[in-house]
Amino acid sequence: MKVMRKTSVYLSDQEAEQLRLLSIRDGRPQAELIREGVRRIIAESDAARRRYRSLGKGRGGGRPYERWQAAEVSSG
Image 1 (cartoon, rainbow, N blue to C red):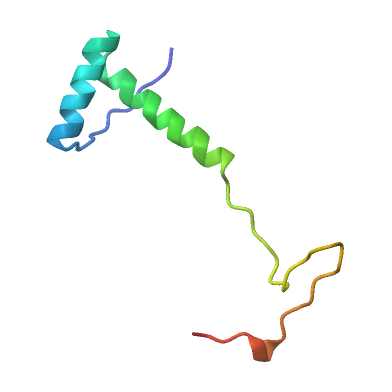
Image 2: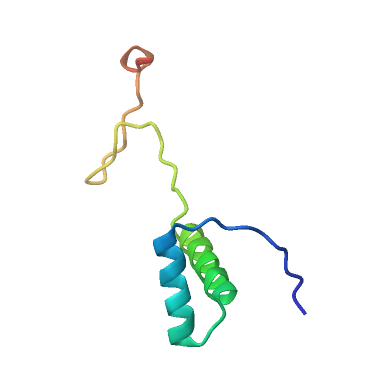
């Protein structure tokens, strides 16, 4: 059995009404729909993890990248 942790979610009137109608239409509890939404966001976030790139000036056509020179990097 999964242990559930209670939390509060603030919804706009429109969001709350749409959630209520979706719950009725699908015959599923609102809490289940919210948990499903949270799981989807987590899965999308994991799939789209940020890829870090080097500070090289770029690569292309099989050419090695050029390193940035300190004088080229400005603070603002």
